Length: 139
Image (cartoon, rainbow, N blue to C red):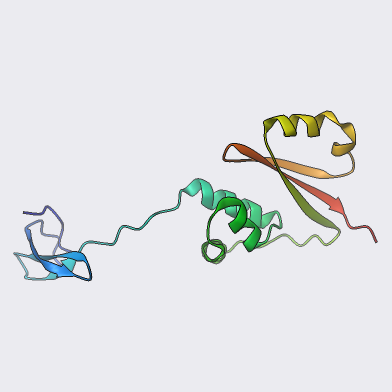
């Protein structure tokens, strides 16, 4: 009935064989092995994984990333561990960020004072833009 591959013998001859933990269970006709289909969770788009990691590298905290992208801070921590991301150590600068729409971004760049004395990057954040600016610590 089902055209699933048996994880034990790779046969495609499997039939339904009950439900376990609200998941359909199957039995292979060839080797009598019982198996369930992998749980399909709500996957997070690679776009958000990349954005979250970019923000982390730029010095944005896990909780701030959670508020900005709507992704659990625990997921972000797991991605940082999985991909072994390290924040560059640069103690003389600290990042600040602003969320701007297109009009606000144009106004920001039209004032020359906003672009002097600091490095910055603009990244798309859904229908808005995130402007990350590095400024020197004032000691």
